Amino acid sequence: MAATKGKILYKVYRALSYGLSPLLYLHLRWRVLRGLEHPLRWPERLGRPSHARPPGPLLWFHAVSLGESLATIPIIKQCILRRPDLNILMTTTTYSAFQVVKNCLPTGVIYQFAPLDTAAAIDTFIAHWKPKVIILMESELWPNLILGASQHGITMALLNARMSATSFKHWSIPVFIPLISLMLSKFSLILPLSNLQAIRFQLLQAPPPIISFAGDLKFAVEDIGMSVAEIKKVEDLRAQLAQRQVWMASSIHRGEEEVILEVHKMLLEAHPNIVTIIVPRHPMHGKEIALEMQKEGQNVALRSQGENITSGTNVYVVDTLGELRYLYGITSIAVVGGSFLPGLAGHNISEAAAAGCAVLTGPYIAHFSSMVAKMQQFNPMSVLQVHGKLDLAEALRNLLGDDKVLEAHRLAAKHAQQALACGIIVGTWNSLHSNVLRSAFGVDDVHKCR
Image 1 (tube, rainbow, N blue to C red):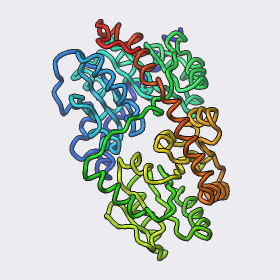
Image 2: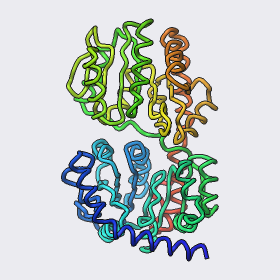
Image 3: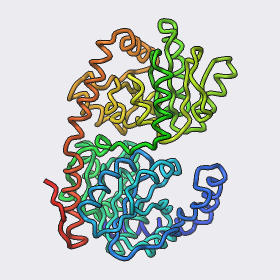
Image 4: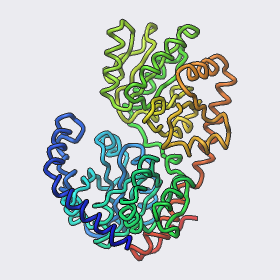
């Protein structure tokens, strides 16, 4: 009965997606004009390929944005090593992910933008690429994608699976339960981020046998490498900061800069030599921050303009993409944003920890609460969770005012990250291969992972 209701709801959703296709097309073109979609490759979002399909079996990985995409790359590398017989397709949704990921993917991996979840786009995409397996990251639960793939006999897995409290609340509405239950029943493997996430998926009627655990892939994101020119730019910045006290606020969302700049002013009283590095989530936001500060008469340097840090510079705004992992290497303190305003849900803290930064984050970390909890369980000093600008300013004063305390927090963060990252790639690959790839492709792992 529930399955029948789920199929009826899917038919309604599919019909609505057909009907709304003209509006979604106009919205897509509007995003192109705003620079939010690729100016030339935007038709890929309609399922139209820009690359020929190679012969042979094909495995499709999909992630939404940059963080999930980078977490996927180690598994793609395992797949290339252990299943060289497979073609690999990688898709992402956001333009910002494309700008970084296209330079990070191993040779031979095909990159495309992901299709919108309309019936026409999904059907066109699947008809061209004909994947045998789809591996989705985190929370990509789209009816046309999942149920359309199932109708074509495609095997599916969900890695780093998570569902926000808001999404769980929406899917738990009785009328939607049959649809989400039907969708989850089509997966051969779900690897949730935590016990809480596993419970949420089970409450939404995911079959218990398909749920397993391997750890958070974001703990194991690899160094993606730098060109000679990029290394020089980072080293030049390191030299400019050599005689200064430095802290960085990363992944800052709109509105959070007010918190960061107020804390910056508080710190200047006791540390006039300090430099605050601000890395906004979106580069255009960085330009806006710099412009507002310049209007106030403050000396701010903007990275995209190649501006140097002089003796009078106290704020450095990084309005570029793809450099965050390396910038963590030039600061001893990282405040990870997306966590200081209601409605936000945090960002990946493991990158800063891996670089050896003392790590701080705000109170709103829903998507990364499990990561923070695991690191704090390993060592309470590994992550400092603060509750507002006054709390943040006090924590930073303590770190900047005592080198031994700072070093202890840096070591705690690095050791926690290393311990938690150990074995995640191997565990994920083993689960994926034994539960999905072996049955779908019928060929064993050429280099068994032990």
